[in-house]
Image (spheres, rainbow, N blue to C red):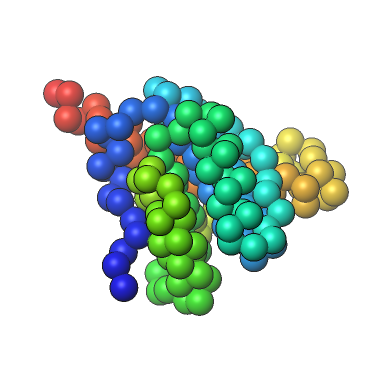
Length: 159
């Protein structure tokens, strides 16, 4: 099976807004960043149904926001190994790539949900609010890590 992911460094050639995706079994958290890759912001959560409906909704949102690529969190185990959730994410990315020509980057998301939860607790968000927003906030952490890397690569190439 072919790898559906583009190296993050390849996105430097296509500046523009990006989506960050936190793919869960029941939801897809979505974040978006600005064209300059400065700030990732939580956007929304898609309640998952079937792949075609999920992909169509995601692609319509990507068109609406003018995104040039997707960064999908890869839920590696803490020891760095891949489990069934990583394979499921790869399968989703592979299927999405057949419907959407935008590049898809895989990004290690091991600590994104923990960081999102901590930031929401620090902001004094209620449990109900955290439960409602955790996936899109985690997507923002995933995307922020990727755009921080993209800015470093872009800036190193400019010197």
